[in-house]
Image (cartoon, rainbow, N blue to C red):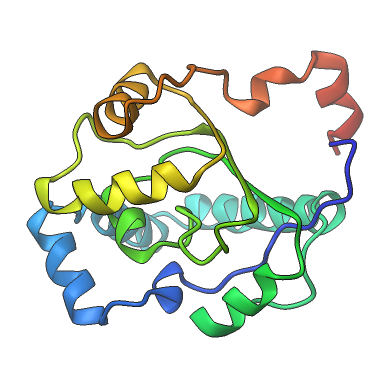
Length: 193
């Protein structure tokens, strides 16, 4: 990246919520946010039914863990709760978030990828973040507006997300490429193992 950085290790995102877990779960049910859970259940069943699939999944996870341990510069530990996460935030000058569907409806609720825990005076940038929805539920609009307005720079990976930001905040934000598409074939080959 050209700068000194750390990727913050984390536990489950819901470990960092301010609101009670039961309220979070109720809101997930209201937006019918069961697809991710259902997908994980399908993968578990497929692993039980197909040993080759299970072995390949285990191998894939092993390769990813090897890659991430050598290529990602991470913090020494994962903060255990919201208070320790907020304390860790004081050690950094700025924060960058970006990936597929990090601003989904459940992310808005738990606040980890929306940088709710980062002090106002710290730089917050969203690059190629995705929402995975075409509209924000009515009860999340105020919370979404608040977190989006705290970001100094936002660039998203789909037009529908840019339209949501414009609707909620009045800000025009650009559509950008997935970061994986910013590397050349040669750059990818140099890190391939």
